[in-house]
Amino acid sequence: MGRGKIVIRRIDNSTSRQVTFSKRRNGLLKKAKELAILCDAEVGVIIFSSTGKLYDFSSTSMKTVIERYNKAKEEHYQQGNPTSEVKFWQREAAILRQQLQNLQENHRQMMGEELSSLSVKDLQNLENQLEMSLRGVRMKKDQILLDEIQELNRKGDLIHQENVDLYKKVYGTREMNGPNRNLPLTNSLGMGDDSHGPVHLQLSQPQQNHETPARATKLGLQLH
Image (tube, rainbow, N blue to C red):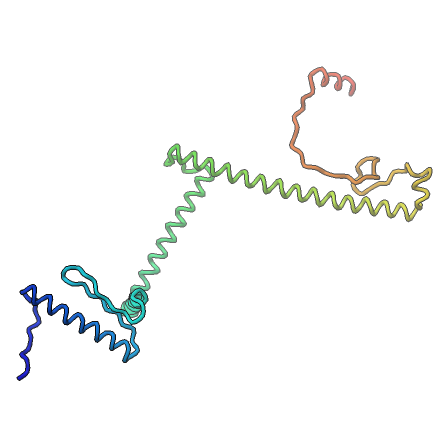
């Protein structure tokens, strides 16, 4: 005679409940292992006892199984609920609108507008940020000017050398070393009579006029 059908309900006796848990737990883990081997399936089983003790089995890695489960669950939810994708893009649009609003507010504050809501500390931070930005702009401007001056000096040297070579072809080397050596060579920059040397430009800061009143008066009288 076979065993009678067991009613599926909570076992009241704690000892019987623990024995049944151990037997069925081992059987469940054994079946999970057999299923993974026989059917080439990726299986993961997690069991917590009534006392909070953990028992688990995974055919590969429990982390991999959980990640695959979450991904499959999310894809299934999106396929079963077409409105989820719409809600997703609505959230993305709201985030982008908020970011745009923050950027516009920062831009207005950079321009010196809408500063009433800022505290003294916020204003100090804004001032420091503007000073750093201005310093970077000035450094970039000075670098561009220096590069342009170097390029002009290089072109001036080339033009001066071309004038010297042309003078040698026209008058010859002997004339340059003879009585005509003091004849001026005019370069394209037209910088005075000393054309035998290249003209070099430099970037300098503006200087204040420290002429004394007496000196200025004397110059004024000489001009009259």
